[in-house]
Image 1 (tube, rainbow, N blue to C red):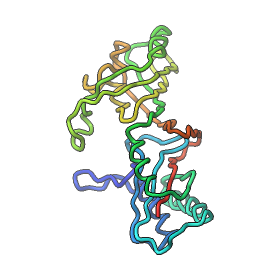
Image 2: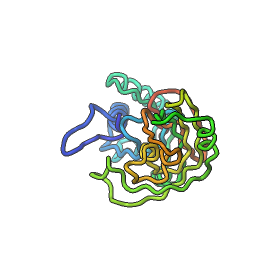
Image 3: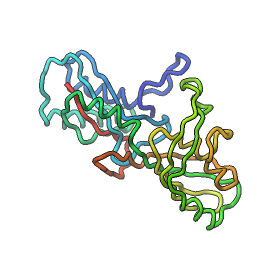
Image 4: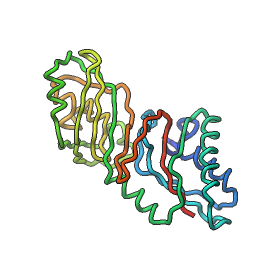
Length: 245
């Protein structure tokens, strides 16, 4: 599911979003507020799962009629998110709720560009790979790549060439043509394009490194590496939260 309301060419895509699930729950729990501002640390495509310990985000309650939120209210709010998400068929879970000041908004926003992320993806290769191919990929450290704005997001992104650092790669073959690739990389890396190359717009890419065509079949975020280093393994769409009032 998308992280925020997804409007393309004036038309709504999908039936809900992480943002709407959380906003519905917070308005239900804290009825006497003027509005809710949702700020998350980065985002993914709608078909990418956020696993691990979740994505940091902050909620700002604007013009509240209450000046403090007791801890038990946060626990009830977390349960309300699960109830709303279950009713919508969109599994969302919030973790690590706490009250914070407005500096939390700045911290969440800044983390979007400074964090590193760990992904897992299922990859197809045109030619059969050998153990030496796997060894080559797994030995790569701090690979600098250049990514032109991907074709699939040209309608909403500026045309730029971005340099990104791929910290580590670990490939496990399922058979000679399919494998699971774990990638640790800097924030802002287009993972799908790193795998298939995007018509040469990302270079080097996984296909060019192995001198074959490669494509991505499934993509998950395993973890977002922040200072706290929290980790998790459940398969719901997870988010870690600060609430600012």
